Length: 268
Image (cartoon, rainbow, N blue to C red; front, side, top):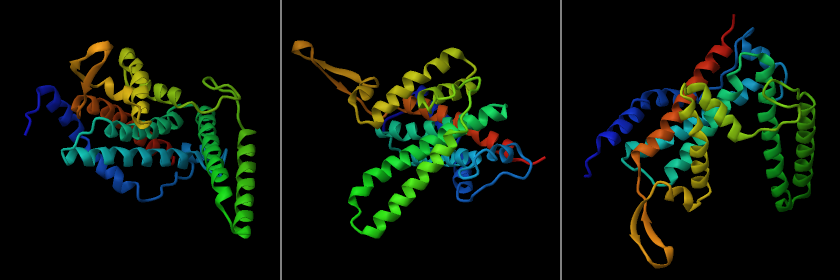
């Protein structure tokens, strides 16, 4: 067994300290939760009852919870992966940041407009998937049903977009941009502007891992051998400190998101 350095041990301790809370959120995620009457979230939901903003935020929190618990499972098994751990943590960061982005502003109109952008992306991706699947449907009645479903979803998307308005952070036509969502959410939980600025390059690395592009792994590698012609051999293994950085950031955003969800959903 390889002895952990002090830095690795601290990174591991920071992660394991979250495990009991992650387990509680995992159990909580099994049940549907609706905002109490008269709550901020209930009032937010009035803008689009077909896919309420509170439910979009809750789905994002649940997705992030699942991803962080999957990362936790590997850590508990003493498996730290050079690439796939970061792919999983990317999903956790996306879900947590998206939820906080929706729930965070104190201004109701801002929260509603942000939710409408996420809802539009939900419809867009669902329609894109249905369009890819359509040519594979051979049964005529099934194809017609799919066409009706797609037309219905497109109408919903069009109607939701009619509700878009300009806010202090969004133009009237601005669509969802995950990089901006993650940067905003990180700045909400990190008091240090320098640390918050480092989240963008971290996000780029995580995306490189998710797309199986080796450059992201190389940023966490060490030189093994220099070779002729400007070539070299690098090696990368599991990195507790790097995993801990992404894990802890995602957890902090997720914790803030769950707290805000409870606050916004509490009735008067």
